[in-house]
Amino acid sequence: MSKHDTKLETEEANRMWASASFVGVLIIIGLPLWWKTTEVYRVALPYDKINAFDTDSHYITTELTVLANDDETAQEVARQIERAFRESDVIKLKIRKQVIPSKLQHLLDSVADEQEALEDIGAAFDIKKHNTFYVVQRKPLYQDVWVGNERVAFFRDVKACSTIIQALEKWIYEPSVLIGARSEVADAARQIRFPSGPGYHVVLSVVHPNPQQMKVNFNPRDAIEDYIGSFVDELSDLHNFTLKSQWLHLLDFDFEATEVRAAGAAAWAVRRARLPLLLTRLEGRAATHVSEWPTLNLALYVAPCHRAPLVLHDENEISPPVQAFMSPKWGGVVFGNPTPEECQERVYTPPVNLIMGTFLSQLRKLLGITDKAALARARLAAARRVAPRGWERDALLRLRALQQLASAETSLKSLAKLLGEISNIVINDEVGASINLAVSSIHLATEHMERGDLLEAHRFSQQAFLAAETAFMEPSLLALLYFPDDQKYAIYIPLFLPIMFPVVLSLKNLLLWFRGKPVHKEKTD
Image (cartoon, rainbow, N blue to C red; front, top):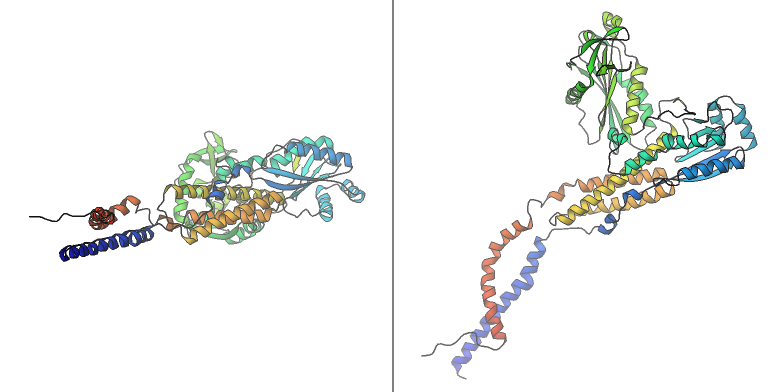
């Protein structure tokens, strides 16, 4: 072999090794580095646990104690109650039976007032404990069943079993409402009550269209503290409440009222179909959108004297004496109608008890306490205080726990589905921490509900709800939605394509050279 051929082979080898080095650097280092730097950052998420959620399987265990004068009555009452709730998949009763001690039995049969008998039961048993209820036999009753404000119901004898079951289903436990809380279908109660949240603002607004013509002798701050404050203080286990009051002057509204006769006197009738326009005016002036917490609006609208009294009517039917209406998930409005004497004296003093009692009735519905329909042979004791009844607080805890748990699971499922369908959504550490916290809280809330620990179940369900909402509404999830994969390739291909052409063309020569075949033919004469 001549020196010229040897030199050509050496040059060719150097050129091939240079090409191989370039291809190696590009493929082994460049391509993985590009792939790594352009990938979407995603924290590992528990998709299997999220997909395994079954909202319809959640239930709450609650304790029920039957106290009777003899063991036979206790056994029969407990058996019938257990049979009535056996098919319920949302309420599981843990029933205990006990014979009333002779001393306590004598006290219950000797006192004439149910409230005194209730105090005797409270001295012997812990009726303040959450998620418990006592069904107690007491023979001197005017009706079959009497349900008090605490977690106690009295019944007369075994014949009252059917009435006891009705009271438990319609008043105490309300399984139909709980089923609606854990489902995505909005029933009548769900359409009215406010959505779940850590807290609410309660704002009492006094709307006075003509302050120059009449003085209103009313202190909204004291009224909301005395009535609403006493009510929401008993619900501190569920939500945080802030109470506010304000005056809205010169907010006039054309009710398009027509003069009618109501209860033998002249009145001005307002069509209910026009009332949503009033809410729009109030919403624009109330200035309640200052926090991410929902606002419960309570408005007292003082009717002008030339349009007093204002009454509401549907077609030809005049509404009851209390002129008020409620808007679901917004609040309630009460019309303050001054009397002719007050209009003459130009000083209006609203009936505080009547107005605030109406507001409390509206507030109960907005928070989730349903109205209790009358039952034959059963009596529901009138509320002695502004605060909700003890078993109503338990019902709210059960309702909110199931609703928050269902909402958290729905949000996580929707988010997991979205992340699976759109690959370029970033999942940073904060989103991953919120999702993992929500998943763990859901499992803890489920365990506490099944054990009957209602307060802890509600606490963990609220924690799961807030964490799931935080993850679902995280702004960083939208960071790369405007930069899909096709745009990424459209940007990088023009950059890499000119480089890849010579690399691809040199691969053929490299393969030939590595196989020992000549990569070119020398020119010959």
